[in-house]
Amino acid sequence: MSAHGTHPAGHGHPDLRLHGAVAAAAVLWWLVYRQLSGLAEAAVAALPVDRHSHAGEALAFFFYDVPKVMLLLLLVVFAMGVLRSYFSAERTRALLSGRAQGIGNVLAAGLGIVTPFCSCSAVPIFIGFVSAGVPLGVTFSFLIAAPMVNEVALVMLFGLVGWEVAAVYLGFGLGLAIVAGFVIGKLNLEHWLQDWVREIQAGAAAPERADRRMADRYREGLQSVKEIFGRVWIWILLGIALGALIHGYVPEDLMVRIMGSGAWWSVPAAVVLGIPMYTNAAGVIPVVEALLGKGAALGTVLAFMMSVIALSLPEMIILRQVLTLRLIAVFIGVVGSGILAVGYLFNLLF
Image 1 (cartoon, rainbow, N blue to C red):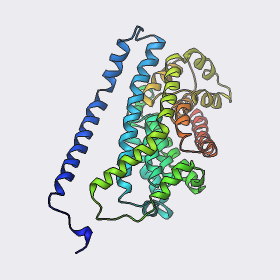
Image 2 (cartoon, rainbow, N blue to C red):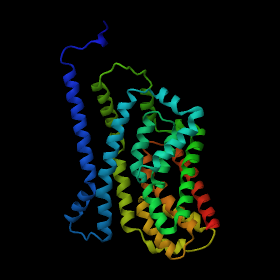
Image 3 (cartoon, one colour):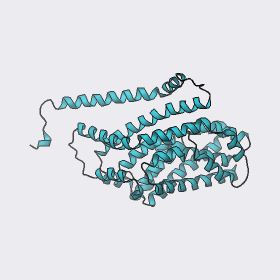
Image 4 (cartoon, rainbow, N blue to C red):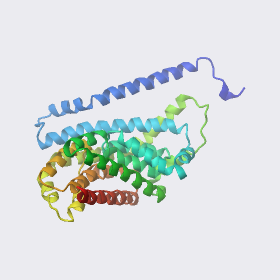
């Protein structure tokens, strides 16, 4: 009988305890995650600042988003590390590459629609997918769709401008995520990932063993957390800090003056203006409403909205730890071109 086929008596008990510990940690994670909003408000209330001031808005944003993104990163990286022990990088790529690549882009974009994440919150899942060997274009489809198209944004757009515009926005947002991810995938730019990401992918290429104990798989998940979280947490902190400052202090009157113009350059100006900002789709809807009320063109406003939630500067700061500058430039170019096309098209249609 092989050494792998038997275990000394009592070996099952440590595994059961380990399963229980992981389950308890998952419950604790969920309980903490559910309380983040209240904890953030309590933290701001404990400080000598007016909650409705610029500083209060920025601090509330920071105290909520930092633990939210960190918790998501811990969960996703751990889970992907465990899953990677079952599926080698080659096997994962074989399932989602080649003729199935377009289907993978559609599935990834669809997953993004039902996950109500802002751009920085979607990055941990993107990192997990990339480190597990999922094709780059497929992961980009998720990264674009998750913040840009979600049920909250669609419901709020429906209430603001009607179901026709909301439906067209859904179609173009989903199409942009699928096409942009497909194009990036066809460019075969995996060699433009950061070296440490490609090293993780290469390490995952060893053949998987079906008889491995769960304790070993959990250890791989923890090792993934150590390798990935340890490299990117400080940049997540800096990116969200920048986003919080922009969220609290952005001058809305300036945006109204720029996007209230009907000139041809208003659409690219709106995109450029949106990139340094950071909020989610629901958070930018009130700004959209204000801009439309001031007479700005619908396509110009939607181009601004899409750039804020799909090309935010804080997101790029975090992605810089995973992608080289060349790959970030390709991502911005492909997605930015799609956003410009949507802006001009909406201005023609509505």
